[in-house]
Length: 115
Image 1 (cartoon, rainbow, N blue to C red):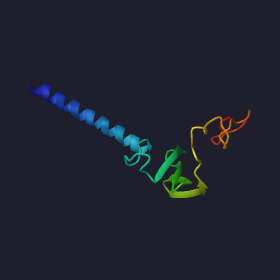
Image 2: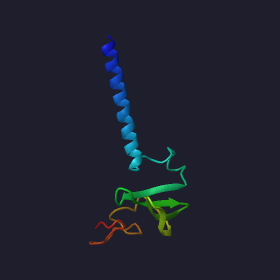
Image 3: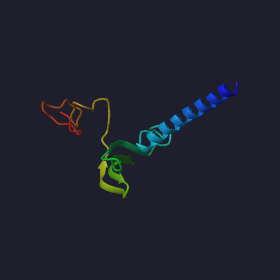
Image 4: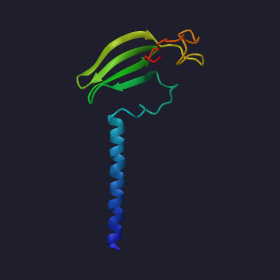
């Protein structure tokens, strides 16, 4: 009976440790949403984030309708580019369409570099 109880406690500790490791990894690599607020309540939005190496990332943020390109790393945060108005999104825009919502011509390159 004591052996069964100690096995159950050891299994519980192992499961909790694995859950803690997963949560740490998700936070470490920026895979969790900030806060827990809905997208409509946020004034600050992280539009994209790309890891450059194990310690530095490139972040595209939107605040008050403007986009900011930031370099975030161990040396701190640096502003790379700012002041661009956020593009208006609607059902007509997206991959394969031009900035005016009309279909892009053959060979046109989108904002993200895709053809």
